Image (cartoon, rainbow, N blue to C red):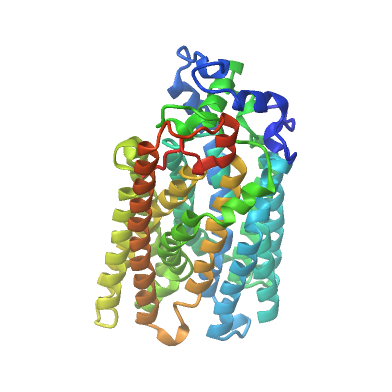
Length: 508
């Protein structure tokens, strides 16, 4: 196990440490000894394999439990939660919606604190918190109790996904990140499948301890989260600089690649800033690409949350029993997980040649086609066709989501700007979850025409956002290439500019 010590990466000092400042200020190819570093004897595949084996399994498990605990209310609903708590349809939707308000608000602060307190401390701590909230949710006695529990679940879970997505960018370069994002995000697909199987099994405990089956779903899954969090304190590594499983030269190689990746396409390498300044947070809040990427994010996340929260209910309303509905969600999520990893592998392999956009745009077209099939076949006595439409949509959602998060992270430079920018995208983007929580109203069953139509609309706008981002990134890259050599900025000034530096090249 590594010895975890707070190094420069966790510092909130407004000025970089002297060694980093000196290295960053030296021009590539002339006086900078770091630029001449020889890593030819390093085996990249071996190092990446070591990183994958030690980082990804635990991250995937954390996110699996996060998504499981967030979405298991959908499973609890068809096991009698609404009837037992004497809730109306709108009240149930409010319990879904309230989660996203606190979830969105706390994501940016959480990502900034991740480096301050170190991932090995911060991520397991918030995990213990939401595990306790989830366990206590199994004891609520009325609508107001469930509403408050969901409010606090949003607070405690807020830091997990943006934190893990940002954590991956601390270890992997731009052309390696989506495959790793997909590996841990596909845990959400497995969570969907596992949730159905687990809920089916736990619901059989109905009456044990005089508790309903849906209560045991919350209690047991919450306890499992706390137990895994305790293990995570000892198994999560902080930063490449302190990774005991890498040799000293391997650590230097990993850090070097990350530091200079943004300007690799230009004729002049510039080190990425790793110090904290409030200016970088402000830059993130005023960056055009983050707000345009939000529409892409909503085009994916609204269908994501709509299906994760309501898929068992939608299938149940097609005429299947609750237990069959739980089991019919399994093949959808398993297929989606496999597609997410496959598409991500191709995206990383070909991103330098064709960019990221095609690997987001095509899966989003699948989402659009899937909901189009669902809305046109609803209420026509064709439950199999509705199921097929939702199946196709989910198989587009899961490959598209890690792609859209990775694309923005690729195009944000400066460690803390990336931290804040990713949290803004994911935080504000998850307001789509608040909206999607109200798409499938009880009054619209069994057709759910309004819900499917709204998913279609958001997906359509998201597709246009993908095209707009691709066009603008290409336009800016061409402009910077034309003006190359005409700027007189120092290396330190360009490092401070981050992705706005003339040497930075956007991933298309």
